[in-house]
Length: 305
Ligand SMILES: NC(=O)c1ccc[n+]([C@@H]2O[C@H](COP(=O)([O-])OP(=O)(O)OC[C@H]3O[C@@H](n4cnc5c(N)ncnc54)[C@H](OP(=O)(O)O)[C@@H]3O)[C@@H](O)[C@H]2O)c1
Image 1 (cartoon, rainbow, N blue to C red):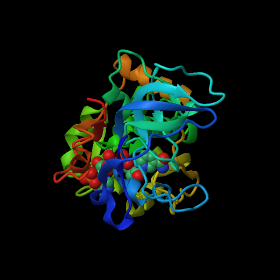
Image 2: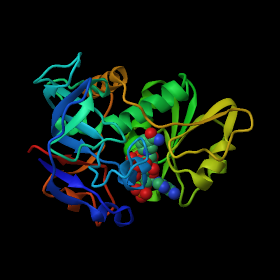
Image 3: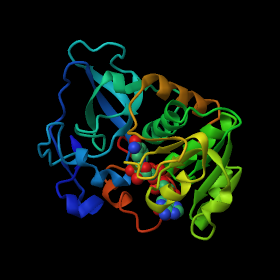
């Protein structure tokens, strides 16, 4: 099969090559998915799981990409809950070969059905950004209606999901980002916007929940804004700044069929908009994943045109 592989950590996304790899085999409880579209998070090149298996052994050449939408073509031994020919989307195991390929072997529990009226490109754009926002707000942040959320990077892949889901849940959303991101963050539902290049976070006032996608100084300044009993949720942990009288948590997103179902239902009924930028074929993926201009949303690779 055709696949994008990486072999050189120092080279980053520029070291990606399109090559031929053996088709994967289905292990216990796996399915094989013919991938129609794949998402990608640019920081994957920095994740240890891109380079090593669960035992810490070098796994290069490794296939990156962990978000997929496609069709089940085979079941592993003992696999239940999905069937051959079913449309699915979901989040691939961090340590196994990923989704920038024509096929992937993946545990069935990491997938959810993709309704027939949702395009594969849309399906592939949702798993990491949608699940991260959902789990950060509701599972780890215990968001309640009427609370105030400081949503950092509100025009980004995760941030646009955080902004929309928090607003739908009845929160007051203060988005942040670069000056150029103001209109986009407001368009995705932020009630107000803090330009981190020119404004000061101190002026924001108290908030119940900080959703941190940036870390460093921004995280530290944000922790000081959290009300008693509030929460700092970070996806770029480990957290170094803690609220004086609140909780701090960093987490890594997990595949969850029920959560994927909540997210895709919101896309179907218009409560959630995707944030898709460039869409490129697998043949053009290396160029598309090495943009020369700032990304205008999540890059999705359409593996099967
Ligand atoms: N723990 C987890 O489970 C998990 C899950 C998903 C993502 N992540 C991590 O979360 C981070 C965000 O992911 P993403 O996919 O949402 O990335 P993204 O699409 O690039 O969004 C991040 C947004 O924040 C902005 N930003 C970053 N640094 C900034 C700064 N100093 N000042 C103002 N704006 C800034 C970015 O602007 P620019 O594009 O101009 O930099 C972008 O708009 C990444 O580090 C990713 O690896 C973790």
